[in-house]
Length: 164
Image (cartoon, rainbow, N blue to C red; front, side, top):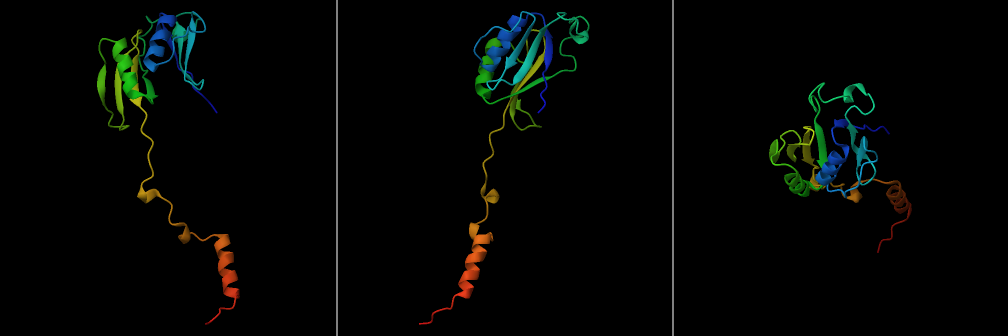
């Protein structure tokens, strides 16, 4: 399996780390380094990496002065606790970029805000699991031929019928 690690340049790794942990409802822990931290999901999947601007001479992470943070980037997160994420987000920012609404493309609720470095962050609800409707149920098992049913039919055909 392959995974993508999205790495963004930030001015304050510890501050941004705390901000994203708050947004996702995670317990507050310090980042692994003062120049780099990984926001992880409960299963250990990397959700986002935060990298100090200019820390290791990566060309695209040298300085926010080279280009505005987030130019051409949308941090799009799908969450399973949308209503709680909305409450947490309202506590983190004074205003949203987009108030909660239903995205016409995904047909799920979403809202957008800016992180402390100005990155555009979209929070989108995971769709509810689809239940199997009557049209998706398996047909009655009697209508499905099986090897066992075929053997039973054949054995009945061999037996003489009693008339009484």
